[in-house]
Image (cartoon, rainbow, N blue to C red; front, side):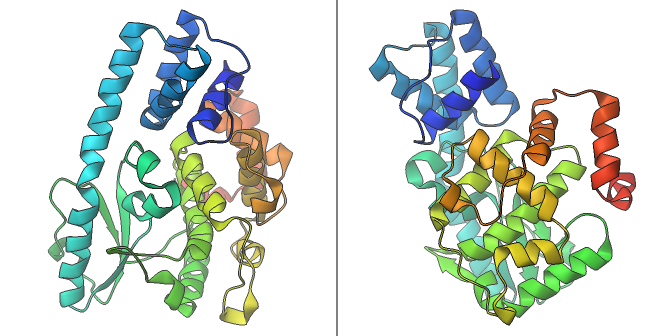
Length: 306
């Protein structure tokens, strides 16, 4: 079932043409439940429809429910970008610079067709030039998380390193993407790795989060330009933030789960860490061995505070 799930995601994102075998009706229902749990139901509906061409069809009642859920996701996403852009313009009039780190900020990475099927949760918006978050307000109908600091884990020293590095490269932190201001994609490859780490230690890492990172890396296409600050590479920044092991695990998942080409990976994959992260996402692990790995390879402070 796990392999079928990975193949369905790969079909959905254009990395594979067809499944290795046709799922049974019961397996289709299991696949649908997995896509819901991992917040990729809309994207995987795209794949389920693409499989019609090969004679592979989910049960009729299931595909109707799947289509209905996907349309709800699409309707939610259709006007979110314009509302968020208006909100950023409102902030800018008050001399508050902002950058959309997640959610709508990933639209150019996904492309319109798939992005409108991406299940949206909270949208992280980073801002500078103001301190009272409560007074900023939020765009109606959107779950926006306003951040006046960029964090990675619970250690303040590591978050200070990340924010200092980001502000030293602020020409890449505030770039225009259609109407939105977002990080440049190369910078997003670092910032979103910090986001994935935060999701892991808060026990919320999902396949949708990893799919976001797949699209970030695929949109870069292996073109990893060094950052202006001391000509650092993405790998250099991961080492600065002590995220190298975690990042290696994510790279292994990019290959194993999403079939991303090796040349699109900014650092070497690490299978041991990748298998650990896969078990965490799919909730398929022994509690003692899993926590033993966390305590061995991750910050105790992060785990205690999470």
